[in-house]
Image 1 (cartoon, rainbow, N blue to C red):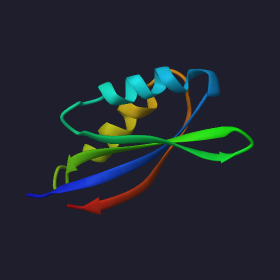
Image 2: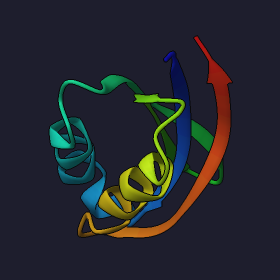
Image 3: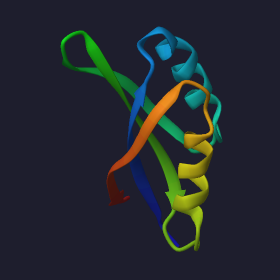
Length: 85
């Protein structure tokens, strides 16, 4: 059984970016890999966050995505990419 890297694009309220980042880092800290902010224009930033999940476990991606969506201050979450490791 291998692993996959999942990258989420997270859109959050600009006033709450710091608290959203802190909460995203707390989600399953064994799986958390990286987080960065990227400007998308007009002073708005998006957060890209990556997690490692097992690739053969049914529902692992959905469970992680639901955990990310429950963070207070997030407006929208998109799966930006998935790749096998």
